Length: 273
Image (cartoon, rainbow, N blue to C red):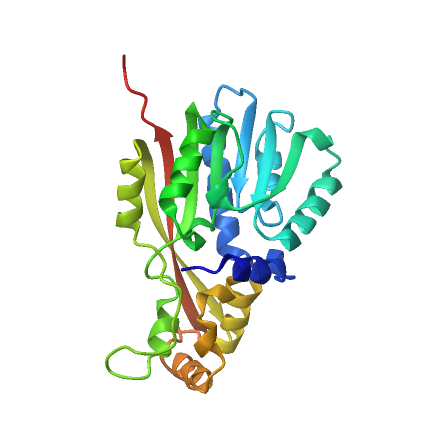
């Protein structure tokens, strides 16, 4: 189970977060295009960004959509990231009543029913403990003709780390966060009477000069909660990094890691009378 206090601390202290959000930027651009496609008629949208971080989503939406065509609500559990989000929004010069930032838990969405036209979450929901509670709250908060867009990490992400830090033939080793299986999440979504309109699986490769550089980049993104702290500082760390450098280099002699990302567009199923 994810320790929410740990998540708050790790992401709030990710000072260089914006400089290392490579795959986040890719999926946020996809989300923006999906919102634009959804809103071909150009109606005014109320948009909720769950796990908004430093409000990168706000910037991209502002560029890709009509600036006066939406009201943005950004929710994040990490106060440190929301401070930077506020700074970003203030720099745009937009009216303060066009963007709101809320410090809150994605599993405890504090919104009234039928509130939003679009709910999206970019590289966040794999940190949740109870996907059912989250889906229930999202469904309630979404208007009947609205959409949800979720981009999140799935099983197979950082597999190179897991393999490098095994210390016996039985697969025992340092403990890492288990990213969700896409099949189980799709089942839960459909069980809530929601319709998956689109599903895509993206594989993204990150490279660095060494495994230590990759590990630092993962930590800079606040994802220290990938590791079990009880084992993180043991002598296995050095051995694991050595294994990583030896076994996972590409043709350019760069060390690499793989992120597997699910991209889902979801709507409510409206039953005919």
